[in-house]
Image 1 (tube, one colour):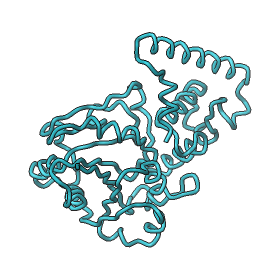
Image 2 (tube, one colour):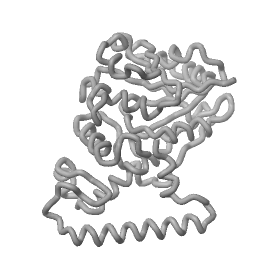
Image 3 (cartoon, rainbow, N blue to C red):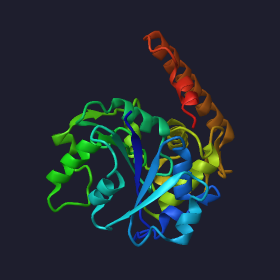
Amino acid sequence: MSETRVVVQARLGSSRLPRKILQDVGGKPLLRLLVERLRGFHIVVAMPEGDAPDPELLAAVSGLNVVFCPGDEDDVLGRYLYATRDMAPGDKIVRVTGDCPLIDPFLVDEAIQMCSGIFGYASNTVMRSYPDGQDVECFTRLGLETLDKQAHRDREHVTRDAAEVLDHVPLVSRHPGSAHYKMSVDTREDLGRVRSLVRTWGEMSGWEDYYEGFGIFDEFVPDQLGAVLRRMCTVTGDGLQGLGGLPGAQIERREHARQAQLLQDRDEFVSDGHGSTPGERRGARSV
C-alpha cells in the first residue's frame, strides 16, 4: 500500500522575522497552527540541523504526531531526500513551507489526488491563482530523486525544474484574482495580517473564507487608505470593526448589494450543472 507524507520545510533563522514559526497566532505557535490544520496527514518537519533540538520548538508541537528530521541548512533538497529516505519510489510527498500557517488541507488533498503516475507532479505554484500562503506541491519519491539529479549546485530550491522534468498538473483556483493576496508570514506586517484573519474568521476556516475577508476590506476601503486602515481595523462579515467614521448606512447598502451578487453567482453556478454551490463547498471545506 502506498504512503503519502507531508514534509514541512521550516527553520528558526529568518532575517526579516526571527523564529517566525514560533510567533503567536491566536494563542498558539504558528507552526502548531499549521500542523493542527493538517491533522490526519503524516507530517515530517524538515529542519536545519541546529534547529531541531530547540526546546521551544519541541514544546510548540508537544502532543502532536510530528516527526522532526534534521539536515543541512543550505541543502533543502537534501533535507527532503533524507526525510523521505524510507519511502518507496511511487509513494507521494507533499511539500509545504513552514511560513504558511493557513494552508488549506483540502488543497493538500486535491494535490495528492491530482498527482498521478510514477513521475506525477501537481502544484498551484507554477501557474499562480491561489493566495501566497496556500502553496502546495505533490510529487513521488522517484520524482524527487529525478529532481535531485537535475539540481546540480542549486540545492535550495526543491522543485525549481519540476514542471519541466515531471508530468505537471496545475491546480487552478476559481478565484484567480486571489493570487494578489498574501497569507504567508515573512515579516511582522504579514504576521499581523494572519493574526487578524484568524481572530476574525477562526483558525480552522477554509482559504476561501479568508480570501472573502480580504474582499470585504477592499470593497469598503479605498486603496489610498488601505495601508493605514489595515492596521486599525478588523474585517468581519458585518463590515469593518474599528472604523467609526465610515457611514454605516453606506456600508450596509454595499454589503446588501454584495450578498445579492453572491446569490446570483450561486444560482448561475448551479444552473450550469455544477451541483453544489460555491458557498456550500466553502462550508464543507471548513477544517
